Image (cartoon, rainbow, N blue to C red):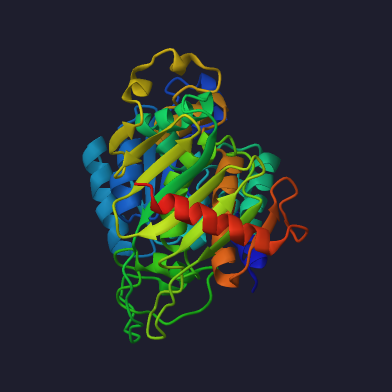
Amino acid sequence: MNRRQFINRSTAASLVATTPLILPSGLLGASSPSKQITLGCIGMGPQGTTTNMAAFLKLPNARVLAVCDCKLSRAHEAKALVDQAYENNDCKVYQDFRDVIGREDIDAVVISTPDHWHVPMSLIALRAGKDVFSEKPSLTITEGRELVREAAKYQKVFQWGIEDRSLTKYWMLAGLARTGAIGEVHSVECGLPNKPLFDIEKPAAIPADLDWNLWLGPAPSAEYTPTVTANQRWRQHTDYSGGSLTDWGAHLCDTAQIGIGMESSGPSEILGTSAKLPKSSYVTAPSGYDILFRYTNDATIRVRDTARKIFIRFEGTDGWIQCEKWNGVLSASNMDLFRNKELGKHPDFWPLPEREQKEFIEAVINRGTTAYHPEAGHRLSSMLHLGHIAVRSGKTIHWNPKKEQFAKEAKEHQASIIYRRESRKWEKGI
């Protein structure tokens, strides 16, 4: 069964498995007395439980009715947290996400699974009439575009689970860069953290409470190994994710693209290198990479996998601004830039959105849009996927961001010269 058949058949199955418990708020619309949006949370690992579900539990206009994980013990642990928050035992536990999507009394689903499930599960939910909050990123460029089309077709609210646009420091960095406060921004550098390498493990017995086949889902068949599902080691294998580039890159590179005014477009020229992985390694995602993205406005974004602390730095013709560590320390060639309230009134300084969970619920109630709508997340993920393609191919990749097609008219050696020049300049940076 191919990926599309899997999604379509799962959609049909989800519509059959219905367990209505209360009248869904969607039937009453925004005029509902309580305006509570009923939720089913799928994927109850740390991100799904302590970040996403925990945030939704605090919102008076949201109500978690179901929790689901293919590792059943995790779902029961999440249920205990929901019951404690609501002081009742109403939350239901599921192992198969289709049973959650099939419930008519659930308005929206919250997807916090490994990356390879994000888009397939979102498509199933959209086609079943649910609004969707899904963790980033997509797994491929093609599936990201399909998600954009389907969300528009079914007129559903969709939010990618990224917080950066609502974090004051990154919002401020991108805003200052867009206003011309440091002159014309010609280059940005993003330092991403290393992910550890680990060797291939021997297959082991599947835990009694884990549906391994469901965990794999649309990914290729594979034998179970003990630590792949633990500590996000799956993130280092391209069957399930794209490593730190699509994980941490989705955060810092979003701010970088916004700062140069290219968040709705993408790079036109991409090239890079990565470290050679040992044959014994389970890791297939790029490691030790150094990638340069060039845009049609001639700005560049350099992304490096580095053991140094996380950082993002904007270089302009009149100065620089940066943030070291995650949501950490701001610094600039002129610190008064961060104190200038007049810059915040610039038309390119968009309003600071609410945190993603609250914004999603309000958008569902008001049938509005979100800061990380389908197109925003697709453009961001596409940039990072193009970086992977460049690293794997060992060649300069030419991309038409408007048509979303690969192009060949540019000369590869010209980009290589640009990359060497940028590399020397950045070595003198932070």
